[in-house]
Length: 241
Image (cartoon, rainbow, N blue to C red):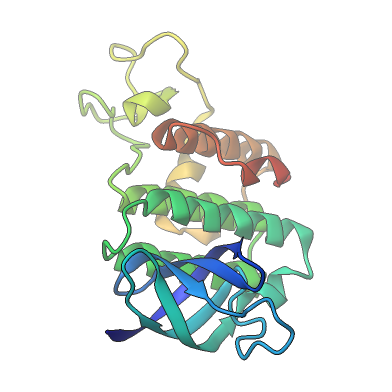
């Protein structure tokens, strides 16, 4: 059976002498792994349309274990814009790995994650905001879509209205003095306000934030992400934080 869908290429693996396994985040079918036959040959009709970061329209044939890509048409070549800037490229790589990890079940529709990734890559290429802050905003939003929305105003445990001075990734965000546990961080009030702005997409606040608050916020976002994914992302170590 053939079907069509649009997708973002997340990663690729070599298969045999000329093929590749392409991991995709599709709009309607969620995470899909498919074979692109002959794609590594110079005469391949797919060309560079199945490289990471590419937004493509695909036709696929269903298979028992892996689907097979039969047609591919480029919609948006995000890799061209990201490949010219190291910071944006590495931040974009983290976005792809995050999407791959958060949408772990194959063929489970995840339209929100797909749209969020497309929007995040589009913002990264546009260059209107710093790549680190686009990445942090994407990470917080993708976690929220996955069901792990952090709390930056009410206590994540008892719900008491803030402001609160303690933050703990394992408890879901800020916690009050009564609920805090040993090892909780104590970020500045300005950093907590910045985190809330990153989650809400309030760029008027984010773009004027001091460097010290941006750095502190990035560290908390990374800790929150690592806790819920149960391990740190491999690509995150290459990002200048």
